[in-house]
Length: 382
Image (cartoon, rainbow, N blue to C red; front, side, top):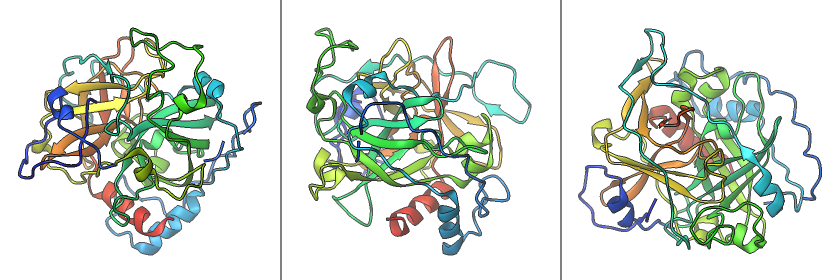
């Protein structure tokens, strides 16, 4: 991502994302604990009683259904002060991005376009300005240890200019069917903003001394509430549930300064729900990939100038977007950006991809269910 702006001229309907697109954007603008062994994961959460009876079918849900679902899903998050030291952050591994090959044999029920042309990931130049500060690292503890995903500061319609919301992928927050929530969940916007953890040639350098202010220039933000798609909790494995691989987090600053996340980083981006697919003619994906050849120290982006392809495991659900991109695990949950009416919008998050070689990413199309969940969360989950 080059630059993302929430200000700009109106009237553009076509969505574009590339170097030129991002150069035109300017984004509308915790608890942490002692080093030591990670706390053991909580027992797997039971499937909420309010889970949908069929994939994506929430059309009949009312306010009380969402309230019951949120209560039953049981998100809790306690982070010991000082837990996320720079050393622990650097040692955290990628939260694995679910793997799916576009060239392997698949059941006839899977509908997919031809694989896209590969787009090489590129590092965002240092120092990251307010335009890039909306993208950050999500740090968490899973049953396999400390892990990393990516997330984006998104606008809160009920609190303009004062959002404390982070949008990411469901797989970054919850294990899915039979599993539980991650722990020690913290958001670090603009990680390594000034490049203090990088070599002079811009490549990341693990083990290079740098201070906490360089690692977390805008502080660490602890998750206090979270929600993932009910469909994600119902299904297991790579498949139809990935068409609903989205999640929302409400955070609180560790400094208790009284300033919101949006005020602190200098911006946010709106989520464009129910975006007409024909208007998504390109996309730019951002994130902090950790797996080789990356190591999580640099904000990377893939600027796809082609219209995203389609991938669908369930024809009754919105097809996923597919773009060429070489980002690896750790970039999962990172936002995909386009412009609408001259302003940046988030239209998807990195969900699944291939490996050996890495060539594409796929993300959910945020349609009715995603909007319904977001509306409920912003209005009722404080």
